Image (cartoon, rainbow, N blue to C red):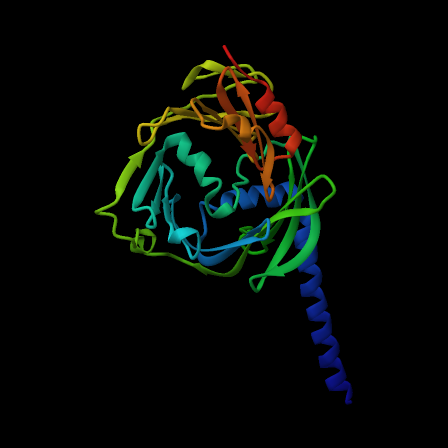
Length: 333
C-alpha cells in the first residue's frame, strides 16, 4: 500500500471514529430525563404511519397507526387487523371506537377520552410521569423497526406499580417499543413497531374513518370528571368511596353506564400519570359470589368482592397487591 493510500485510509478511519464518538457523546450528553422530555414532546411534533404489534399473555394483536399533527393538534386513526377489525379515531377532544362486528360506535369526550387514549393499541402514554413515583435511567442502544434507538428504563419507587423499558428513536425520541416489567425486571407485556415511516405532512383524509357507520348504533358516554384523594367521593357515585389508594393515584374520570335495561354500573378510573386502576360497582349481578376473588390476564390483574350486595371489581395493569388493596377498601359512604 502506498503512503498516499495509507494516509487516505487513516483519515477515513479517523473520520468514522470521530463521527461514532460524537454520536455516543451526543446521546450521553442527554440524561434519561432529557430523553423522557423529548419523548413526551414527540407526540405533538411527529407525523408517522406504522404497524404496531402487541404481545401479552400468549396473545398477539396487530394494528395500523396513522398519526397526523397539524399545527400541534394530533389526530390518529388506528385500524386493528385483529379484535374484530375495530377502528379508533382520536383527537384532543374525543375518542371514537368503531366496532364493525357489533355494528356499534362508542364515543368518549373530555377527560374520559384522555384516559382511554392512553390505552389505545395497548401502547401506554408516558406524558404524565411523576418523578416522585418513577425514576429513569439510560440502558444502552438497540435497533427497532430498522431505526437506531436509545433504551430507557422507568422504574417505580414502590411496589404498587410496574416499571417499563422503552426504546426511543434517536432522531425523534418517539417510543418504538415498550416492555412492561415486574419488580424483578421480567417482561410481562410488550408493544413494538415492526415498521414505521416518518413524513413531513399527512393529509387529513388519512385519519378519517374508512368504515361506513350509517346503520350502526351510536353510544356517547355521560362522564363526570374531577380530582380525588384516597378518601374523596366520586362525583358520579356519591354513595361510594375508595378508602385506600397508592400514593400518587387520583381520580381521572367517573362514568355511569347502563345498557339494555340492565342495572347501572359505575366506573371510577384512577391514574398516577402512567398506571391506571379501574373500579367497577355493579348491582344485581347474577352469580356474583362465583366471581369473587383474584384473576389476571397477562399483566392485567383484577380483584372482585361483594359489598352490601354490590359486586366491586378493581382492575389494572398493576401488581395484584395493588388491586387487592383498592378493591377491599371500597365502601358505602
